[in-house]
Image (cartoon, rainbow, N blue to C red; front, side, top):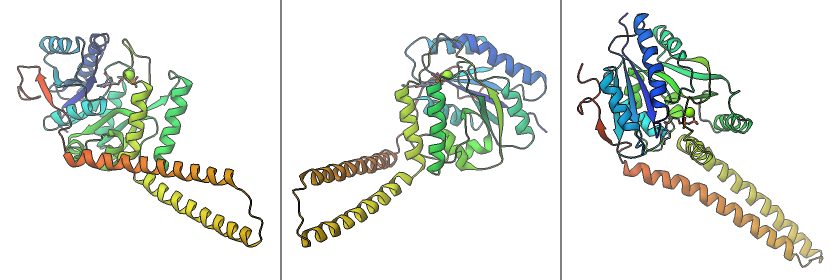
Length: 324
Ligand code: UDP
Ligand code: MG
């Protein structure tokens, strides 16, 4: 079997503190895999600078001059982790045989890459990196993450438990991924929709090697909400079901009021009516909000704006893989 060309896709946002630290680890791993004859010498590392405001791009440019195996692309502004990963994947899809996406902070165990490549050689087109333990996470992060995976599954979104975006995909999968034209990205859910043979590789997750997290609770909540509303219409159906349930309750309530009136024991029920009005208007507002969320999404999808814009490239602006 021909040795596959591996492209490691690494998104970076304001990562000047950690880039150089982890770059050596990534290149060592690639060289090790080349030495073991598991991947081709044409394998590369592709850094995607997601519109950083610090020296990230300067560092990437320098690294790419020092090391031919490193490429960089710079997005015109910060678009978020998911879009940066997609940019790297789509830019590499025609020149690599396999891609592995990984964060640049050294949190995900780099040695799992070898197992991923082995799984590909054994016939898998998608290899999910799955965290074997979350002991380095806070209790809050662990609890919310696990509750979220359960919620996603209840909503009918297929995701692998404890898998983030550390994943191997073959070029066949990338070609299919490029046909998904949506703007609201939740890659781990989209990849499961593609199908093909998949498997999982387990790894431990460490602390960041430097710098700080760019995924505050706010961004995590946005991604979590996007995950559900981009891939599932169950919330709309739940609202319809809720509507029916409330209508049914009101119907019983009306019968109860009519019987009460006939029996002559009408009371001043100010409190109960007010409570009902509050409840019903609250539920209506909530329902409108969720429906609005979907309409907002339709609005964005209909515009079909580009999902990322490259402003600069290392290697004199050539496309990735062009100089080979
Ligand atoms: N990242 C990005 N764009 C963003 C935020 C983050 O490309 O807007 C990158 C970041 O540089 C890192 C990866 O996404 O390589 C994961 O981010 P981070 O480590 O901050 O998240 P955490 O691991 O804390 O969830
Ligand atoms: Mg991280």
